[in-house]
Amino acid sequence: MRVTDIIQLQALIRSKDWTSAHAMLDDARNRAFTSEDIRREAYWRVAVLEGEQRYEEALELLRKNANLFNSQSLVHLDLARYLDKLGRSQEALDELKKAPIEEEMEDYYGLAIDAKFFYLLAKSGDTSVKEQLAEIPDDYRHIAMGGKFLTKADIVALLK
Image (cartoon, rainbow, N blue to C red; front, side, top):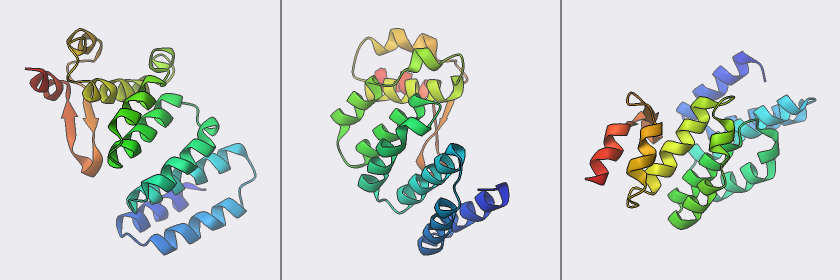
């Protein structure tokens, strides 16, 4: 997928034109020659399924293609988000526990810190979270669904 294809696909997602988005992704899958092409198609297909709120299918596709992604923290974070949306919070927490957050801090800092933040948010009732929060920068902002922001201060407020 070229940059222009991705821009067009993002527009289709914003307009909720799911039929056209899937058709475009089907075409991208048919033209996929490299592992990068396959990864991009899988990534955007998961994004479309998420937009359609087809979380079970997004989970299945992401699990099937997890090995294509460089950051496994991102994969586990997305799996946890979908499980949470399906009301399966304990499974979501278990999924986050599998994320190699510390191992990916150097190479994929932004993605690893997102996974850590979500994990701490999920564990906000646990007293050890306060100690672990010291590892999250004070100015950290997590972009949640719908473009809303969560900050470190939001978690600290939940713990009081």
